[in-house]
Amino acid sequence: MAMKQPHVVIFPFPLQGHMKPLLCLAQLLCHAGLHVTYVNTHHNHQRLANRQALSTHFPTLHFESISDGLPEDDPRTLNSQLLIALKTSIRPHFGELLKTISLKAESNDALVPPPSCIMTDGLVTFAFDVAEELELPILSFNVPCPRYLWTCLCLPKLIENGQLPFQDDDMNVEITGVPGMEGLLHRQDLPGFCRVKQADHPSLQFAINETQTLKRASALILDTVYELDAPCISHMALMFPKIYTLGPLHALLNSQIGDMSRGLASHGSLWKSDLNCMTWLDSQPSKSVIYVSFGTLVHLTRAQVIEFWYGLVNSGNPFLWVMRSDITSGDHQIPAELEQGTKERGYIVDWVSQEEVLAHKSVGGFLTHSGWNSTLESIVAGLPMICWPNLGDQYIISRTVCRQWKIGLQLNENCDRSNIESMVQTLMGPKREEIQSSMDAISKLARDSVAEGGSSHNNLEQLIEYIRNLQH
Ligand code: UDX
Image 1 (cartoon, rainbow, N blue to C red):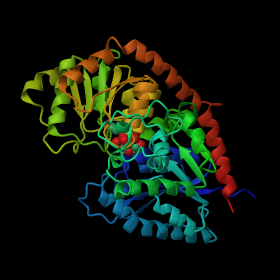
Image 2 (cartoon, protein in one colour; image 1 turned 90 degrees about the horizontal axis):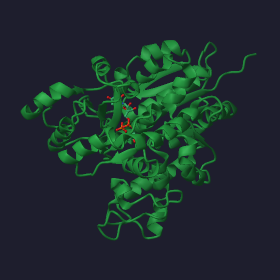
Image 3 (spheres, rainbow, N blue to C red; image 1 turned 180 degrees about the horizontal axis):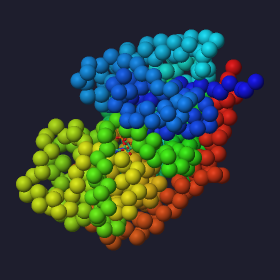
Image 4 (cartoon, helix red, strand yellow; image 1 turned 45 degrees about the vertical axis):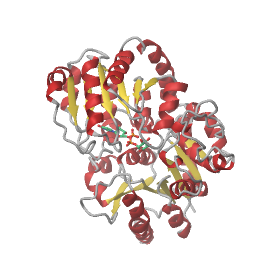
């Protein structure tokens, strides 16, 4: 009799940057024959591009959706409403859904086996209680940069040794209590919730408790290349029963299911991509374009938008700029004085297929907010970066990219037009060769890790084996 395949129920934190890597992993697990139920909120379920194509290509990939309990017009961004909805609405619906899936699997003609484990995003900590109630193993998938997770795991130690809360306003002081990040981490790299006056501040305590919950996971999955983050991972390995590094996941998917995957992976998108920009890119000289995107969560003031705009136009380089409709509360009208320069050299879009843009031969640099997905995508494409971090893990990523890996330049927090202009010119001109050569080495490491025999490739096989052995 054929062995029953395991069934993994995946629930991502319901935001774009968190959904895509988990959808990549879902496809990889289905490619290996496992059943996966990928659970979205109703809102995201309706917006997820080409869900149908994914189901057709992977017959063992099932989609389900649950209510987030938020009003239709809620912006559904990273805010307290969403965090509250997770615990009050999403948690009970998720528990109910799991029971329904298990009941369905008990019927004689069921095609889908009962859940063997739950896999959730590190931000979805309620799932630990649900999994424990149902006696299911839980695997925690960490979307942000692993160095950020490791730093958050060390916060109690930083409080204990007096480095937190900060004793004064000097943000340049080095943080020394995070093993593996010696000489790298400074106060300014820590996330916003660390900038509080008291150790028992609710935001700081909330972050600490949420992170400590992850230690209850049967295994931790990281979207990174082991060789890039080894100093931190070796310390984390003492806290978790198992760690699997599988990154860059989008590249692992591309390498395992070939050209097919490019379209399918980008189908993890909640927005519709502008395809005309690819034709515009075709008409630009090789490596001349600076691609600009601040991810899905960063908001700019109208004044900041104007500074970036001047900086880009004045740099003299062609630029492709993703200006999400909600990026600023001000209007998106081209300022009259920049109209000509934008017409001549600029292309502004709502959303692009970023992996394709980064791989385009005309693109020579990436002005980014240093989101972890964008950073990994830039590394795989071998594209030097200008980093303008804004929140969460972005500060640590930017620090690592610019100071340790030397594959990017860091823009000051207080961006002004002349700074942006000179930074773009430097990246696209005199510094390019030097940064490109570091980037080529890091990029090769990432690409090798997903190829046969590479660390991420091998770890995926081991993860699949591990999940198969979880079956009871
Ligand atoms: C945030 C944090 O910054 C990030 O570090 C964390 O891990 C997840 O939450 P976000 O702002 O969404 O992420 O940025 P990023 O992690 O870079 O993810 C953005 C994703 O959207 C990328 O996969 C990128 O390819 C995609 N994208 C962005 C597009 O496909 N098209 C676009 O036009 C812009």
